[in-house]
Length: 157
Image 1: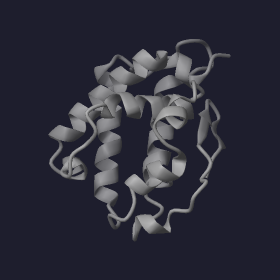
Image 2: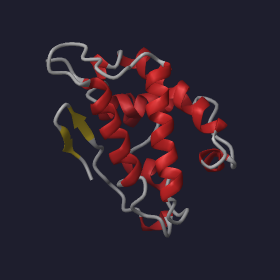
Image 3: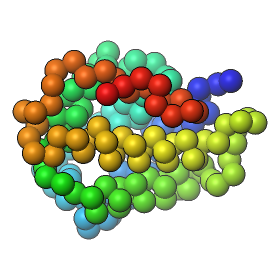
């Protein structure tokens, strides 16, 4: 069975998805606040590399950009933000539709792609990226990079 990364279109598919998600969150008055301090010009490509590594693709993110602890630190110390998280997840679901990952899309028998991607993104948003809401200094070094399969979390924090 192919990986979630492969079913999502590999790097190209995830770059499209990350770009669609970024456009959606920038248009959302609540979620866009997370980017009010600015963002890297290659944000969509970096995000796609991170998702790709988590979904069974190459280790491009950890090899070139950073480790899991650095990602979690970037998303930490901003207090609790449940509404923002819910809206970011809704933007992700809409972005999947934007790029053609629709309900019932299976890729191959046994590959419920949309549901798997939704579950991964919702998990990452509400757990690892929200765990250290008080301070980025609370994030320990050496957090394991999460790995997500068709069956959910297989390795990670």
